[in-house]
Length: 156
Ligand code: ADP
Image (cartoon, rainbow, N blue to C red):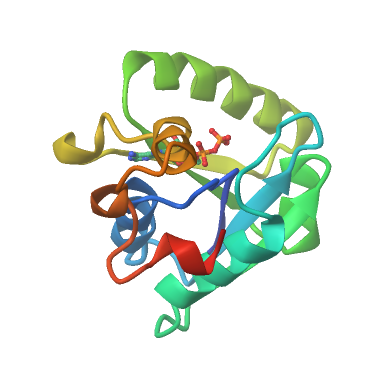
């Protein structure tokens, strides 16, 4: 059976930390679907369409990586695309506590799902989308936190 993983997140914006998690996970799965969860309660900087475009541009040469968006529960999206693995990144103990609860509840809702966690590279630990978003809102230069070769102005 094909090993399909969903990497869910807001990705507003996608950062070097996200790139690293996906790139390192490539050897573990046959297919990785980067899935943008549409959360109506969260205000966003990039539209979902632009987030899809940005991530697709980053992985344009990677056949096993696709990008999608979904509404509703992540486990329902996993069922829809036949994914048995959820990929997540862990930076800190706070991430762990948050991810532990989500993962255990997901497993209670869908027993066949397994969450796979990759620890962030040390240099990516402080990078999170909220901080990068703040830099961009205040017209700062966030290029060192964004995927290589991406000019964020093309996606705002
Ligand atoms: P969410 O809103 O679901 O937290 P994010 O886009 O912030 O979505 O993150 C998606 C996933 O990527 C999460 O598992 C998060 O822990 C992971 N992640 C975010 N930033 C980094 C980073 N700098 N290094 C490694 N993993 C990260």
